[in-house]
Amino acid sequence: MYVAKNRVALTGNQAVAYAMKQINPDVCAAYPITPSTDLMQEFCNYVANGEVTTEMVLVESEHSAMSACIGAAAAGGRVMTATSACGLALMWEVLYVASSCRLPIVMTLVNRAFNAPLNIHCDHSDAMGSRDAGWIQIFGETAQEAYDNTIQAVRIAEHPDVRLPVMSCFDGFIISHSLEVIELIEDEKVREFVGEYRPSYSLLDVDNPITVGPLDLQNYYMEHKRQQREAMEIAKGVILDVGKEFGKKFGREYGFYDEYMLDDADIAVVVLSSTAGTTRVAVDELRRMGIKAGLLKPRVFRPFPGREFANALSHVKAIAVLDRAETFGGEGGPLFIELRSSLYNLPRRPIIVNRIFGLGGRDIFVHDIKAVFCELLQGLERGVPPREFDYITIRE
Image 1 (spheres, rainbow, N blue to C red):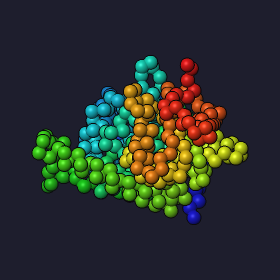
Image 2 (image 1 turned 90 degrees about the horizontal axis):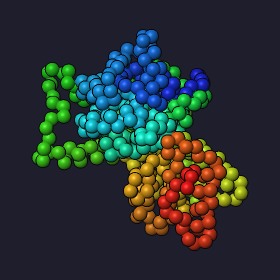
Image 3 (image 1 turned 60 degrees about the vertical axis):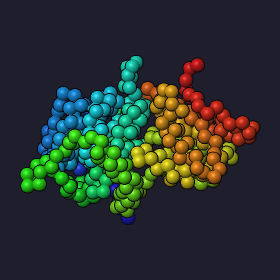
């Protein structure tokens, strides 16, 4: 059994920067933005102190940062970066280039609300706005998970049957700036786990010249898009394999989701990231009252493991999906829309409702989540489902 030798208190940003130091990518290009700024500052210190051999490229914008990452990855380098919110939005055009060219870039996305009005605190609008850009998306609940996900993301992205970029997401300020005691893996074990990167192609291989991102009109464009979808499907198995191997080596196994008190639950909440911790406390309090409440916390959002989520929730009578992002005119939040679609073919569909919460970093407390559970319970008892869509923690 693996026993961690190094337990330290780090913020989420510090933990990810340390993982990047251990991975020692060939190139990191960045234009820092709150709340991911000190992540890149921390990594820049490792570069300046000679603790890594990474070529650190400081650019004039986030668009340029991702463009530099694309060039470096196309040249055969192991490439990483980080950003948040408006920085991700400025990368919008080139996010699609990275995924369409099948470049295994790993980007930490420290989740933050979009402007306007100006807000620098957490919600998931940035990740959800880019959910169809062709990137694998993994969410961490804690600094420990953010650290572990960063290491696994390299293996997932670089798998020869996947070769897709990965966003490793965690909540801005709530996780990025909060201290947590985490277990660090020894440097040599991280290097052994991620291995040496062997790119399939390289712009610098003059004996085998290639073209990256050529003109691709009606004759083949659809086939290339289908190949991206097939790679996403393959990524599901790779994510599970990498998570199991990580568990065998380091004692913390990862899959598509975590569940808490879900096996016999009548009512359940589905929620991403740090709010899952608050939900566990609510579940514990309700269980002590004899109420069969449970939690499903998705870890992987792209590729969306719909069948797996449906199987895990098939016995539950009523579900509330909590979304920390809006769709403005859609049929609910992004996680709700995906999950409800996944549950459609179940022989007995559970009641499913959506609640938007925490936009712009607004706090959510245990009593707020207990109130959502109670809505589900009352709906079952009365035979009248709760309102399908609503906000919580909002002034009317």
